[in-house]
Length: 104
Image (cartoon, rainbow, N blue to C red; front, side):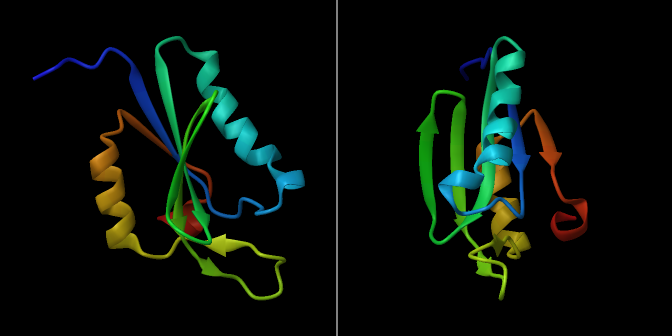
C-alpha cells in the first residue's frame, strides 16, 4: 500500500456564489491550503452538475446541488448519503465545514 506524504484537507462549502465575480470565498478556501507545505486541498461545492476541476491551488469538486429560489443561482448540498460516499472516496485527513447548519 503506497504511503501518502501530503495531508489532504477537504473543505465542504455551501452558499458559494455561482458567478465568476463572486468566487472570493471559493478562492480563499482554496488558497488556505497553500499556507501549509505538503497539503492537498479539495474544495467540495454545490454546482449545476457533478464536475471536477484542478486549479493551481487545489481540486474543486462540484456536486449537483438543489437551486435555492430567489438567490441568484445559489445551490445547496442536501444529499447526505451521497456526500458521505464522496467524502469516503476522497480519504481526507481533515474535514472543514463552512456551514455547519446545512452540512451537519
